[in-house]
Image (tube, rainbow, N blue to C red; front, side, top):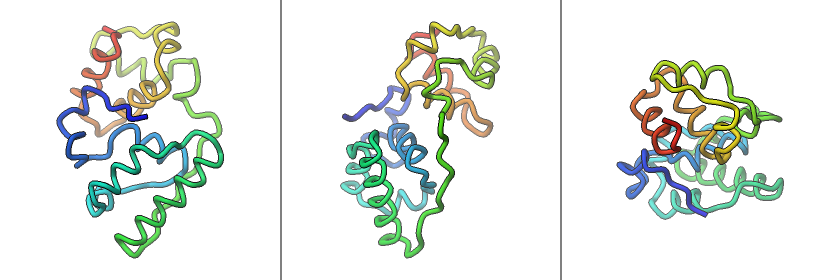
Length: 149
C-alpha cells in the first residue's frame, strides 16, 4: 500500500526524493540509502521500493536483499548497513521528548492520546522531521496534516 503524505506532494510524483514510506522501510531493514544512490535508480525501481512490503521478518529480509542488489547494480558498492532498533520510537506509545520539544517550538502540545492515535508511519515521519537539519516547515506541515494543531 502506498502512503504518501501531503507534505511530500512536491516530489512524490517524480520520486526525486526518498518518501517517508521508503525511509521507514530502510530503517526497518537496516540499510542507509543516500539520495545520490536513490537518484541513480530508475523511476520503476524507485516505485518498486515504495510498493514492496516490509513488515514481517521474511518481507524485511527480502526488502534488504532487493535494495542491496539495486545499490550494487547502480553504484558497484554495497549500501551501508545500519543498526536496527529493536523497539523503534515510532512503534512506542510514548511521545519522544525530542518530538515534544519540537512541537512546543511551534506552539503545539502533543498528548499521549495524540501520539497513540497516530499511525506508526505518521510517528516515524514526525521523528525524522524533528531531527536537526530538517526544514521546520515540513514538521509544521506534518503536524497540521495529522490534525495535531
